[in-house]
Image (cartoon, rainbow, N blue to C red; front, side, top):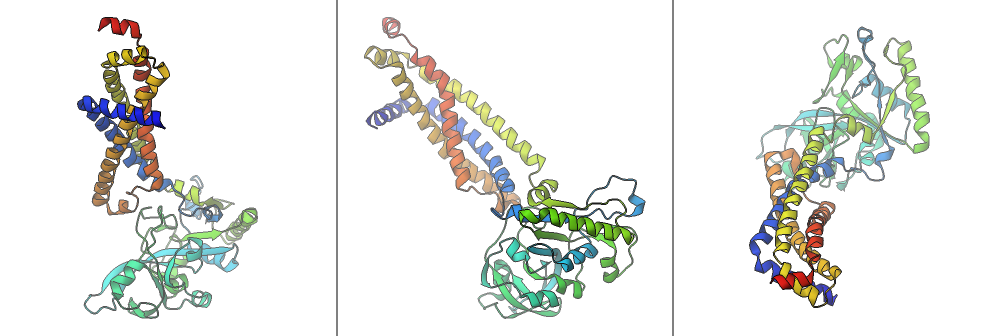
Length: 436
């Protein structure tokens, strides 16, 4: 430890003797770190598992419900589901948990009289949704199974929405008027913004904020709340909400939680449903259903887009170019100290000791580059969040990315210093001293 302290003292003296080259090396390294970490942070956030330990148990059934007029095309499972199929799966009750959900937009009459009515986006969901996606409650809980089955006028609010419409008043048990209907508040979520927001990817961004409110799926159907989101219909469709539900209109996200040993049996039940629907004249294009995992669902919707991957690759290439420049600066610094190296070697220092001294110096440059690079990274992420509100949830450094930034900077500086250090340490003391 004493030798390391001595090397650090020598490195600081050396850096002070030639601050310009040292500052250039730190700046170039910091720019490479900032560019790479800004892109890698977004990639890390979007590719992260939003439900560790649970995501492997969540699946999305999909059907190809195209009409006979589309029979010449390649069979492709729909991204979302019709009400006909979702209702049949809910009635069958298969799986540990199951939930159908879709977006709703409703007029809100705030409890605070100083606020005028306004439109707000929420979600109609089955009771199991909250447990399946680990939605945390600050107060109250989800509605009951009876509320769910009967489609009663109950609502769960997000933390931000509850504060907005109720202010300092207690929302739990209070009444909130949605679309001219009073809904009883049964729960308030704690601040919650899963990233990526995998539970509802159709027609929305994976970094979108959590919905403001949640009402029972059956309540939305009974009160004929239209879908406020992505809808794809095929075949003939008559006007009216009831006809919309009977039509081949895909608009529902449907999730099921399965134990690993039950996946095969559930797949067989889905195929049986397809066979039954074919006998009724539906689904002429396919004989099997598709059961996608959460990861497959995210991949199909391009949660981690090709643009994000390309940006990360280009940023890493820029970091490599920065390291090449740092190599040149390190070579210039160490070559200029050939006389110092010759004296040390003549006094008995081994080549390994000279290499160790210069690597400690490179490590200090790496730490300085990491510190400046992190400051630039935080600034870059703040600018991105300011320009795009959806990125605010992912444009932030966590502990993993902080450690990666420091590790990349140190490793980059040490790698950049290896060749110049080895070359400089090979100076022959006798020849160097004779030339002085």
